[in-house]
Amino acid sequence: AQTVTQSQPEMSVQEAETVTLSCTYDTSESDYYLFWYKQPPSRQMILVIRQEAYKQQNATENRFSVNFQKAAKSFSLKISDSQLGDAAMYFCAYRQSGAGSYQLTFGKGTKLSVIP
Amino acid sequence: GAVVSQHPSRVICKSGTSVKIECRSLDFQATTMFWYRQFPKQSLMLMATSNEGSKATYEQGVEKDKFLINHASLTLSTLTVTSAHPEDSSFYICSARYRVGSEAFFGQGTRLTVV
Image 1 (cartoon, rainbow over the protein chains, first blue to last red):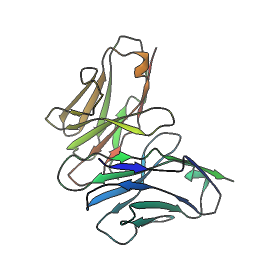
Image 2: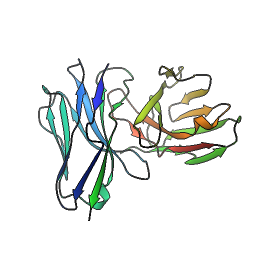
Image 3: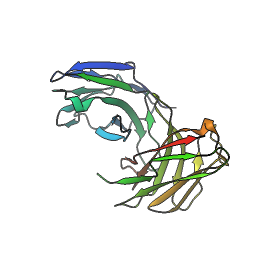
């Protein structure tokens, strides 16, 4: 079974600074998807960024980028120029690719605080 | 991105009654919908996966007779908590996917309080 581990229950960052959230996963599959979701106090799950395992290039979405190390099964999220609105719970998630109703497997989350 | 609407956002019900939560994909046809439960300060726990027109697949430990899931159309799935008890109080979230391999989009969630 796939597992996703987020080893940092809480993190804090100064506004405008950069922070990196860690995520490791375990799988025997070679093709899969990895995601970072943000859950603000409203509790709406928002997709931040997505990475396909077969792509070597790290995904980037504006201030958000990932460091995907497939051999190490590591998928960290870097938030640059942190803003107050970035404060939220961040969940790393894994999903197997291919035909089938494969569900997301979530990590336990990292609570990010942004200090003004 | 695609929009998933979940209703109601909050509901309070009396112990022993049933409550229905709706999950609608507003601008796409959802072939697969997922129902999650989230306890305070915890991650999302998958309850069941439902495919349009077929019975839901429940995760181990989830009572299928208590949490009834219906996915009768490509845009609507419902979760009915039957004979609710205070321990069923939680935050329930649905997500929908419109084709195999695509990402899933989440509803706003429903906070259920059983008194």
